Length: 303
Image 1: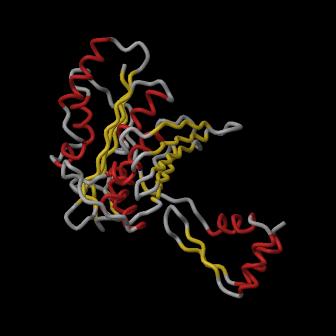
Image 2: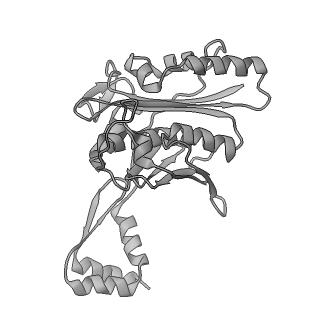
Image 3: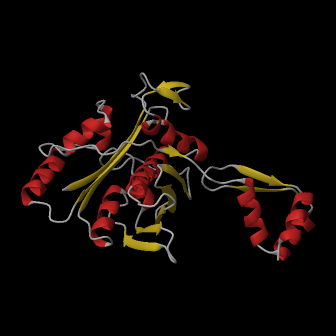
């Protein structure tokens, strides 16, 4: 047996659908809409190469999040590298919500030798960390060395070494000429225990004949059609379809709790400065401002 997750975001799928924040009109599937990755680009004002890197990691994370069992389970992917991007953090849950940010969102690099956005060069050498918070006493943490920095290969290596699950991961983000996101998508294919050799052989053949995620999506293929290409000859059955979206769960209340947690001395120092402070969320760039009087109120709650 083969387990497959497929995620697609595309501007081409705009007909006969629901209201879309990105298009200001109707698009076919609010979960598979370009709004999710394009919104992330707008929020962080990312350069093209960072948009590609963050979009790939978010696509991988939202699929891995859907593989979690519990409704409140959380998945975090962290990449740290010695390249100019330095690192990225993405968090997803089992309900299709994903958020993320890059440490250096505006770096510019020349194209790779293949003439493509040099995601691997932006990330460099480093590590991928996978954190799964499943409500246990301690979260599961797995860490592997980056293989290429291109993210899909790194996730494939993670599944094989840390989870001992033979997998194939494909990810892609295609940019418009104005540097907005045209389409993004990906797949995760995993072999179930005791998969027959004939199935493995057919899958290897299909993967060898598959071009790239971005090329297939640029041809106008739907997620279902991409699935049929990847699992040709296996009679795939679609067991679930669900939306996904960029969503940050930050709030003023949570920021207040964070300020309280730093302790009375630091809060008093901010009050003594006599200036309004501003706290920005890493994930969505929302700014929360606190006046001196509000800081005094938080000081009374601190220890």
